[in-house]
Length: 336
Image (tube, rainbow, N blue to C red; front, side, top):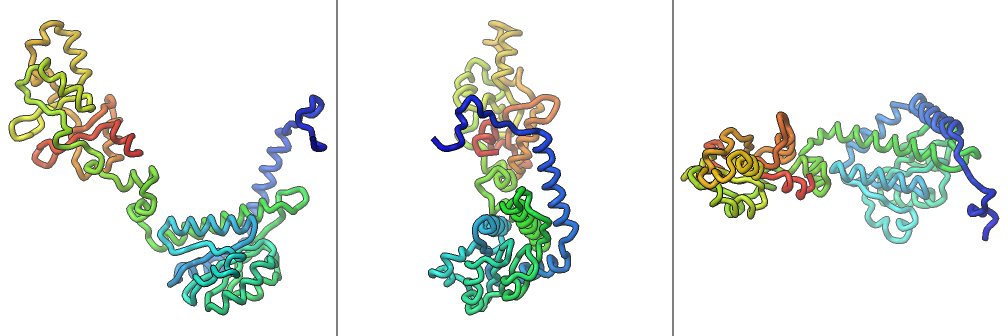
């Protein structure tokens, strides 16, 4: 057992709420120092340099700064910008082969004296890449050997010893991600383009999927004629998994809908009289509908809209002909 025995009944660590609050306030003050002292002209030149890039924007760093550099590269990639992370150690063992004279290499380092990055610089220069250092200590070695330097003002680390990189990495992340969004705006990235880079996520699906991508069609449709007896259509009502019948005429024009809820209400109100009733007599002749080119997320909103939510929407064309049905279950299953 080590010297710190947390199982001991005499040891009961607690977080003082005032201490925690003061830490958050201190971090806020440190971040404010960064915002108030950031050189906008440097930042603008850096951002414009990235925007003008005709190659790939590589990011590099060691330790916590390396994690930040990797994350920022991934942010740019998700925005459709050619970017990547180049490990300074792996670069010296072959990976620098990916670097070309068209590329930009951004080096993140709090001190600017990181040995691994300093060893990487002459090799990257030999490849003809444009080098940018992003540092927080004035007059550092890395800034003196790069083509451009961006200074990230750091008051101090939140760590009581001013050692653990917590505030410095926070401002690196804020800086990098804010520049990424500036690039996004300058490149006029559309929602559709953004969604195309996130096809598996909910955001992407909500921006990409249309009703025609998620609707049931043809043999999957629970259809019947208005003259059909209700009791003769129970199999059609229950077997297609839509919870409804689409009432159509001979040319597939939509007349109305009849739901399993309508069936229960009709049975309760008419009893045995239900055996003599047709679907057309009891159907809803003014159902909500949607077109196949509408966004799937809009179909979901329409289902949930007042006066009461519904579980499906008939999909019709401009001639009121039924071409499909979209269900709430289908939308949820699609990840929306």
